[in-house]
Image (tube, rainbow, N blue to C red):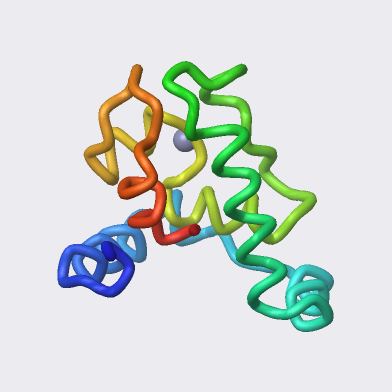
Length: 111
Ligand SMILES: [Zn+2]
């Protein structure tokens, strides 16, 4: 899985070095929300958002499908460049115009 690999270590460093990506952080209400629901529930939420909004070959409203705020997963998606197909291509080298395979899906740091 990418998130456990050397590639993920390198990508994490690049994301942290990005002024834009590194500015995203959870506010206290979101931290509390995550604590209250637990890691597994939050992971399920994130996977649902990615499945619905990023996995199709041509996602609806691509480039604008991930709100800036309102759920910790949205913030995490922007922080990890898992917000739209353009960012998936640019940061994760996942081509646009093709549905995400389950392998690619499982490699995303957000899933
Ligand atoms: Zn994006």
